[in-house]
Image (cartoon, rainbow, N blue to C red; front, side, top):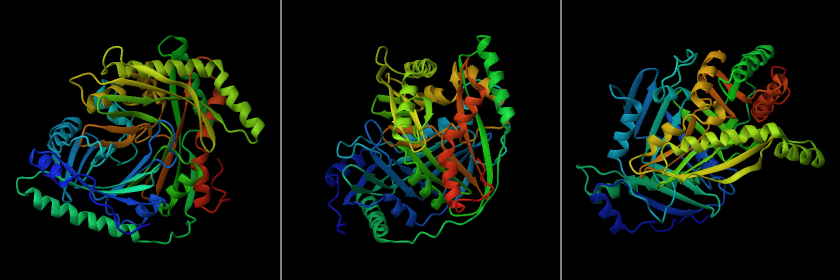
Length: 498
């Protein structure tokens, strides 16, 4: 890698004009970089918060950029009924709602689209737990949480690294945030100083320590017969015409002592995924290998990518091809998938222009380390008067992990699942200063809270589902997570009987 960065991406005169008009402006440099960006993030000093949005497996319509950084200048949190604003390590409890406060903050730090950089250049890292849906819809009281983790967070970042996987270019970005106390020249000098600090991290190395054997008390939090009974109870709702399909999950928990970054590094090697992420949120670490996009907004263009239909990978080429054909031709899987694509179209249609919603990719196969998925892509154009938070409200949580109709299915899930979902089936991604966003669905995800760890896996239930098959589908979906834990605990640890 050439240690000398290129010149600034944007002309200084253009930056000055936009800054004086009240816009947040990115100061950016390009650096050729052919290495793994994870190694930079791994070496970064981390305090309370850090994020790595990882498109390690990027192709087709999937993202081709990874974004990472530390030390947000502002954090907006929701915990139970409290909305908390953190600045300079001081907390203030607000009387406004989480979403209305977020709208105000994005209005304050508004940006512009830059053709030279058609990607996230600054804004907020969003982490929304499943419980945020209670802010959007009238629902029965949520099952009590057995964790102190936040329900939703927005980490507002001024400085960010952006890696272009296709071009093998790293962007170093520091934003000039308009302030009455700073002239453009002062803000520029401050951002340039921040860029110099970012550059120093490109040449820092740190040897990864060996994985620690620190995994005990691995257990299923729901016994197999209980999960199968949950499936049968959901089927009674389906037979009564109350719902058409519901997604039910089970949870596994364990005690963990080790380096969370090493666990994520193992997981991204075992199961590279297009919407993966690593988050450090004070005492909570989120380690995700999500394959699914909830919603992307670029300008007024909106895109969702529902996954519905799963088979395990075959052991040999012949067996693997048989699994592929079976998934694509299975009438039950196809009917369920079409129903959930229609739900995605309906959700987008709530905020998109009439007749703009289209399915531009239907029931294609995507392969991962342990499973094969059936995937579609749905697009639309956001109608005037709606913003990214209206779009989030329309889409959240994803229909593929609740069921159809969505609200009634969420009521059924609330009744049948014995624990709150917390981050599981929520969303992680970015919301930028320009009004764009790209959010995943939090599946295939491990959450670490101190020494406690857990993950959840689910299956879609329809009227003719076989409870044993649905149980086995949840087990297939958790295999990559378990393999990462096995390797972290030196392979043959007897506590990992999965």
